[in-house]
Structures are given as C-alpha cells and as structure tokens.
Image (cartoon, rainbow, N blue to C red; front, side, top):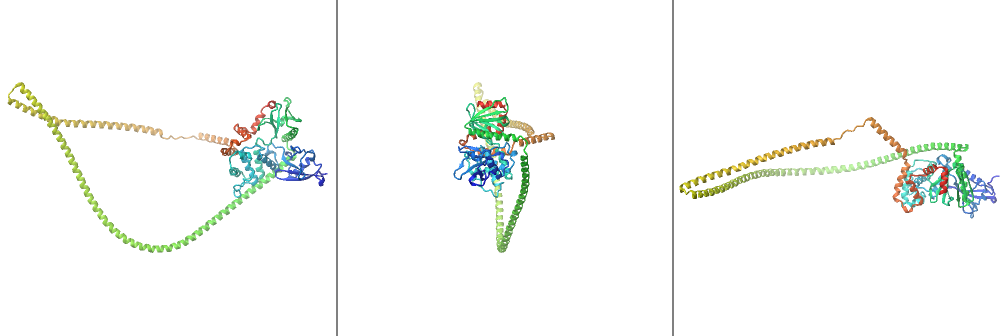
Amino acid sequence: MSPFGSKKNRSLSVRVSTFDSELEFELEQRATGQDLFDLVCRTIGLRESWYFGLQYVDTRSNVSWLKMDKKVKDQRVELHSNNNFYVFSFYAKFFPENVSEELIQEITQHLFFLQVKQSILSMDIYCRPEASVLLASYAVHVQYGPYDYETYKDGMLAGGELLPKGVTDQYQMTPEMWEERIKTWYMDHEPMTRDEVEMEYLKIAQDLDMYGVNYFPITNKNKTKLWLGVTAVGLNIYDERDKLTPKTTFQWNEIRHVSFDDKKFTIRLVDAKVSSFIFYSQDLHINKMILDLCKGNHDLYMRRRKPDTMEIQQMKAQAKEEKQRRQIERKKFIREKKLREKAEHDRFELEKRLEHLQDEMRMASDALRRSEETKELYFEKSRVNEEQMQLTECKANHFKTEMDRLRERQMKIEREKHDLEKKIRDADFYVHQLTVENDKREAETEKLRKELICAKMAEREATARLLNFLNSGRKSSTDSLLTTSTVSNAVHTSSSIAAISTPSLTNSISTNDIETAGGADLTTSASHYNIMGDNSSNISDDLEPKEFILTDNEMEQITNEIERSHMEYLRKSKKQVQQLQTLRSEIAPHKIEENQSNLDILSEAQIKAGENKYSTLKKLKSGSTKARVAFFEEL
C-alpha cells in the first residue's frame, strides 16, 4: 500500500518550504521521512537529492533534520497549532567541494544559489563588502537577465535586498551610490543564461571562509571554548572569537571513527599511533547533529573519490547534452538578436536620414520662398542704390576738387616747411661757427694773459737783478739802463717761446697716450672674443646629440623581454581581482570604523597577511596528524 493515503482522518498535513516555492502534501500516518523527502524531490524534479534534507523545529525548539528511516509523526515535529499541519524547510544539508564539477542539474544549482544568497544576506556567511557588491551584480543578472540599457531604469535596484545589512551599515553611502557600483559590475557581465550566472555566483561564494561550514560550540579537555566546523572535506577547529581562520583541521581521510557518549564526542584517527582526540558539546542534541553531518559528509567525501555510478554518468551526459543544446540555442539567439539589433539600427538610421532629408526639403522650400522675397527687395534696393550712386558720384567729384585744393595747399606748406628747416640748419651752423670762434678767442685770451703774467714776473726778476747789480758795482747809470733793457727783452722773448711750445708738447703726448691705450684695449678685446669663441665651440660640441642605434639582436632581446613580462603579468593578474581591489579602494573613504564587526577586523587582518581560505588550510595540513591533535588538546 502507498504511504500517501486519501483518507483525511488518517492523513498528515505537511507543508514544505523551499526558497522559491511552498509545497503541501497529505501523508499517511505511517509515512517515513524518506517517503516525504522522495515526494518533495519528485515534485521539484530533483535527482541530486544526496545534498539536501528536511529541516524542522522540534517540540523543544531545537533545529533538527528529519530522519529518513523513522516515521514523520514519531520525530517530535512541532505541529502548527492554527492549521494543524507540520512545517518543514527543504535545505541543502551537505555542500560540494567544487560546485562547477559536482553540481549537475540546474535545479540543484538554483537551490544552492538561493540558499547561499540568503545565508550571505542574513550574514550567516561572512562576505567582504567588495565581494558582496560583485555577488549582488550576479543576483541582479539572475533576476533581470543580461543588462539592457533600454529597459534598465535608475532606482530599479534600490527596492530589493541585495547587500548584507552589515555592509551597508559599515559605509556612509546612499542606496544610489551602492546601486551605481552594482550597476557597473552588472553592465560588465557577458550575456549568460540563468544557470550560468548562478554557477558564477556559487564559484565566488565557495571561496568564502564560512561557506559550507556548520558551526557547533564545543570545549576541549582544558575547557577552552572553541567552535567545531563540519565541512565537506573534514573537521575544522576555530577560536571562540574567530570563525574565519581555523586553528587546526582534520580531513575525512584521516578520520576512522566518530562516536559520542552523552556530551562527550570521540574522534578516532586512521593512524593507530595517534591517540583519539575528545571534545565536549553543550547537550546531547548537538552531538546527534554533529554525528549525522559527519557521516553524511564522510560518505560524500569518499564517494567523490570513486568512479561515478551509472546514474551519475547518465545525469552528467544528459546535463552535457542539455548544456550543448542550450549553448546552440543561445548562440542562435545571440546571432538573431544581433541581426535584429542591426536591422533596428539600420531602420533607425534610415528613419533618421529620412527625417533629415525632410528637414532639408522644408529648409529648401523656406529658402526658395525667402529668395523670391529677397529678389524683389534686391530690385528695389538696386534702384535706390543707383540713385545713391549718382549722388555719390557728385559728392565724389566735389570731394576730388576739394582734395586737389588741399593737396596743393599741403605741397605749398611742405615747401615753406622745407625752406624754414634749411634756414634753421644754416642758423644752427652759423651759431656753431660763432661758438667755435668764441672758444678760440677765449683760448687766445687765456694764452695772452698767461704770457703777460710771465712777462711781469720776468720784469720783476730783471729789476731785482738790476738793483743788486747797481748796489754792488756802482756803475754808471747809462750802462745799467742799457743792460737792464737787454736783459728784459731777452727774458720776455724766452718766456714767450716757452709758453708757446709747452701746449703743443702736451697735446702731442696726450694724443700718443690715447692712441697707445686704445690699441691695447682693442687687442685685449679681440683676444677675449677669440677665447669665448673657442669655448662656445667646445660647449656646442658637448651638447650636440649623438645618434644611438640598436642592433637587430638587441632589439629582438628587448622585444622578447617585453613579451615575457607581459605574459607574466597577464598570468598573475586577474581582471576580477583588479576590479575588487579597485572597488575596495573606491569605497574605503566612506568606511565608518566604529561600525566594523569582529569579522570585518579579522578579514582585514587576513588580507594584510596575504592569506585566504585555501592557503590557511594548506598550511594547517602541512603538519603531522599527531602534532595537530596535540595542538588541539593544548588550546
């Protein structure tokens, strides 16, 4: 008999909520959890059911997963008091290691996308602000399709919940500013189908530190409060204040057995030489959930490392065929879209050209009408112009006569001016001659004055000598007078000769001195010029550019080096990383430091240290299992 009965008095009313639908079923009293789970999977068309489970809140207000081997009514599921039905949530219970390689069906991708997006928006998964903007752009792409400038309107994204509240509170930015940055990424995306966009979203989300981690509070033997993280690849141990960076880790291939006794949980390792490590949880319910998640994740971990089953191979083949078919349809759609856009563009250009030609015709008609009106105006103006020309000719003749008269008057004035200038020049020359003559006469007067002074001095001297002579010899007065006269004349004559000769000699010496000095100066100047000329030539030679020629071999080496550097740069740098860094620097000035959470601070420290999720796990796994167990016990 089927577990899904039709009798209402014997049925269970069940409501199952997924992230995009609400399902209601009527089950028989004996229906198990597996019966309900299979019914939900068939209803939504899900075949990759091993990732999912049915979650509920039990009568003790604990969140639990529905057990597949037990009856639904026997699992302490809280009955909704108003409508008398059971409520379940269809969630992803286990996560893949690599979404692009493991998720096959589109419905599986879609359910993971919706759940991960909700976890990021509710801040159950920490996401950095710049990565939140990138993921929001993909979420918008899923909701509205590829960016279309014709349908997109400003403010279209403001109404939806696109970013975690912790991100918007951390920055002093308006919704319009966030929308502008999301729109920039949205415009940059290539045209993709919904499932391709969702896969891109999940590829980025799976690199987040808290993605796919179920956290449980535990303590070690030292009663240190820690977090246990159950993941798809193993168990991580976290500090109580840091859920991002694990302290140590144990992969599933290192774990042999997992068990618990009340609150005590024991992990036995594959290496027999390494002792088991023990931790303690808060209650028995948490240990049951940990054990359930450990079994499921361990099974999937080992299953991934085995050849695919026939069912998986068929699913992958079907998904591949479906993907190829959609790619062909997509290429066809893109080609048709381009042709339609080209046709619309051509039609728009033709309409634009037609409007332009019509405008030109209207302008030509208006111009023709205006030209006719202008023609009549021109005829009238030509008649008026002829009259004005006649009047102008009369005035011109009058002006010409007047100009001739003024020209003759000007020429007469010019002649009078020329005569007057000539007289002024003659007067100036005459005044100059008089000045020169006056200077000569003054010089002769000065010369005669000097000669007179010399003659008087000679006369005094001769008189004195004569008196001396008279007193000493007492000669006759006749001889004395004679002698005095002779001496006086001689002295006067010699003084005149000396006075006349001295200026000439002085002038001669001065002229020679001047000539000699001038020659020396010229020679010195010429020598200095030659030296400067030589220096200038040397400097010019030094400054002259020398031609630098590269050989073909050197040029080839430089080219190869540039190409190698370019390839190395392209290999190391990724467009997405650069865009994230750019966005991070753009929004950094708007950050409100006091609104940062503990996870924000830890993430900043992680970035500065150059660490990420995978580098941290790789570093932790490098140590031996024994060392990691000892490290855990010493925490």
